[in-house]
Length: 252
Image 1 (tube, rainbow, N blue to C red):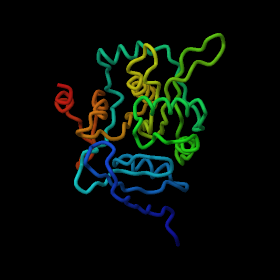
Image 2: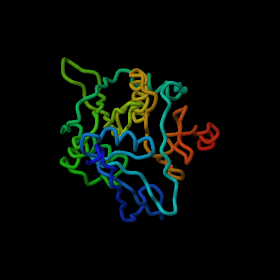
Image 3: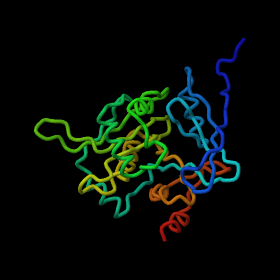
Image 4: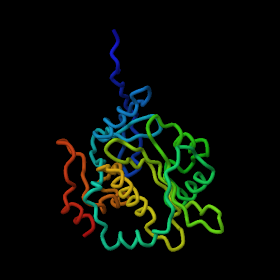
């Protein structure tokens, strides 16, 4: 008699240049997400630091580096600081909606602008529209694209200026990938607004966490994740507080 759930097989990638820390190499361990139990597997792996990309769950498995640390926001305790309140007020007119995981030309063009503005030399810079469609649509779990639009005018749909591919789990929202118009007039901090909107969406749904992926010790472009409190990090002893002192040190 066969077992109802087969234990997943894990694989390890070859070492490659680290995209976050110069001079370092990265290696990942990964497994496929497929079959009737893909959602349960994705959630179980997410709680031990894995992230999803299409139908694959992965996490860093570097031989000589532990800089990548999974972090998640506790939605019930979050209180925006003065700067965050200004960002919320500035963008309070945006219309956010959770859409089915189906790619559109409008989303892809926004992604292209975002990559050109923020990550022109990054590994995603050469993505074409089919690559983006795979990124959005090849999902074996409960996923959606949260769109952020300017207010409608004269009955026409407002311009798309932000989006986030988001997985809904039983304990929270996992922000798979967000992108936005980083040069939108009068809207600095749009990426931060998207995170706070996810906190409010999770809280309204009674979900305790928003999973932000990896905080990378030593990578300046990943430090924004520590601005959201209370924050937890995954340690060898499980999820623990990301100490407020640690966060203060990062911005002193």
